[in-house]
Structure formats: structure tokens, C-alpha cells
Length: 431
Image (cartoon, rainbow, N blue to C red):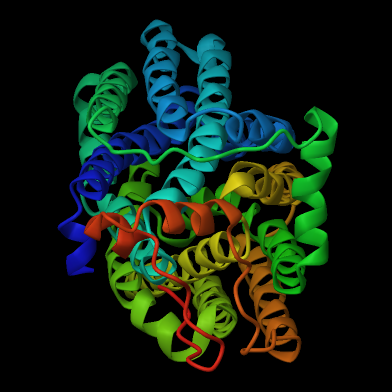
């Protein structure tokens, strides 16, 4: 991790992502709370997240174009577009304007799909195999750690000046992130013509289907999102009926989860080196299942402890999945594979949120949380039983191999392009 922090380009990327995450967490909280305040409806507040995830449905197509262009340039343009996208929120006045909130949520989701696909390719091109897990963990820790400040700051800013002030804050963080990206050194990636749009699109999907561990994890996570989507709606009933608090209390819970996310992001590197990505994900799901189950009997202490535990587990899960995906995918296909996986998750997640909006009016939030817990625990059992062979080597990257041959004269590049560990070492590197 110290080596990473000495890398100027990675530091700039990390700072930009951290500031952007601060604005995003404040904004996402404001979007849901804003709808709740304007309409008084938990269902409509929970649905504010639905437009955000819909762009993932076209993610694989977007990923094809991400892989065709310099990743840093795509990230800069996306940051600038996202800053412009939140401006319409200054025109929201009453319940009749909530459609603007949904439109902005969609545009931010679109920007996120493109940005994350490009960032995956940029990281793989910048860093060596052994650094990917720590790089992802540090990004996750600092980004999610913004839950410690952003939700409370967002709630306070919302209460004092309204949602428009939060929107301007988020736009500012996007602009700063874009400026920092101009100073990131982005290695040139040799990319051959793979035969056109449809051929490239199929290549990304086929790679997931033919790579056993990616296929298992993608299927499992589709079911995870099917369970998790309902939580976006049920959380408001938990706060209202279970804890008897105002909607703004969501900021406190987000902060508690941020504490756990920081811990998880710091610990995930060592965890993956010790037990591997698959086992890390299985244990994380077990912790999430138990943490969700206790929410059926909410007290303030139980809910706060559960939020911290879930934050730790979610960090472990996200970083382990992302690292495994990066290691199993050639650098030239990172955008397509990343966005294709996101698309697979979107359909069950969107369906789950929509179902949650209906269920919450007829089913107790306690029943919903218990049902979710059962599903999380069942998926953890599935992954444990079908865990991949721990000796399977990572998929080699053609571009990284070529660059390693060309750039031996640079000590920095030599570190970044170091060969992956041999199978016998089982040193797996450490959303």
C-alpha cells in the first residue's frame, strides 16, 4: 500500500475519487430524502434509486465504446457531464417537480456506468497484478469512508439550504475530480480491431460465461441484488416504524455503514491474500445475512452495530469481486466485462426495488429483512460449496505482457507491470 501511495498518478486518482464520493453520498441521500419530504411517501423515496441503476441495462454496449478510447479521457469527459447533469435540480420546487429528481438520478447512473468501466481499465493498465487488490481496497475504503462525513453533511446542508445546495456541492466535486485526472499518467494500450461492435460485445459476455469463477459469482450476485434492492425501500419503514425517527436519520445509518466500510477496505487486502477472493466473498455474505436478520428486531444499538458490520462486509464483497474480475480479464476487455456484469445485476435489482415499493405497503419491514437474510445466507452456502480451485492462475493480459517487454527501462513501469504470482504461491492480489 505504501508503494501505491508513492505513485503520483494513483494519488491523484484516489484524491479525486474521494472528493467525488463525498459529493455523491451527500447527493444520493438528498435525492431520497428530498422525495420523501416533498411527497411523504416511503415508496416514492425508495424509487429515487431506480432510475440510477437503469443505465446499467445498456452497460455492455457502453463498455464496447469505453474499450475503444483512452480511459482517462473518458473519465474526464464523464466527470464534466455529471457536473452538468445535476444542475436541473436547482429548479425543483414542490412535489410536481420530483420527475426532475428521477431524471438527474438516471443521468448520474449513466455517468457512473461509463466512469466505472473506464476506471477498471485504467487501473489495470496503471498497476501490476500484485497491486490491484490493495488499490481497489484503498479506493473502496476512502470512497466509502465518506459515509462518515457526507451523509451528515448532506443532511445538514439539506436541512439548512435545501436540495439545491447539495446539488451544487456534488457538481463541484465532479469538476475537481476532472481537474485531478489531467495529471494522471495513463499508459497507452495497444488495441487490435476485434471485428466490430457486435463481435466486441459478444466477446465480453462470452468471457464471463466461459470463466468459471466469474460465471459463478455473477450468478450469485444477481441473486444478492435481487434481495438487496428491497432494502432501498424498506429502510425508510425501518427508520419510521422501527426506530420512530425522521427520514433524515438515514444519514446517521449511512455514516455508521461508512465506519464499517473504512475498516473493510483496509482489511480486505490481507484477507484476500490469506483466504482468496472467493472465500472472502462467501464470508462477507454470511456477515451481511446475519446483519440484516437482526434488523427485524430493531433498537437503536442493534441497528447501528448492524450498519457497521454490513459496511465491513460490503467492502469485502465489492473489492474481492472487483479484484477477481480485473485479474481474470484482459486489459483490452475491462470496460465490456465490467459493464456486462453490472447489466446482469441491474435487472434483478430494478425488479427488487419495484417489488419493494409494492411489498412495503402490505408486508412488514421485519418480514422483508428476514426473507433477505435467508437469501444472503443461502447464497453464501452456494459459493462455499462451489468455490473455485484455489490453484487456478489468473488470465494473462496481452497488453500488459507487451508493455512489460517494451518498458523494462523504467523502474516505475517495471513495478506496475510485474508478472502475476505463480499458482504455487497462491498470492491473490488485494462498486
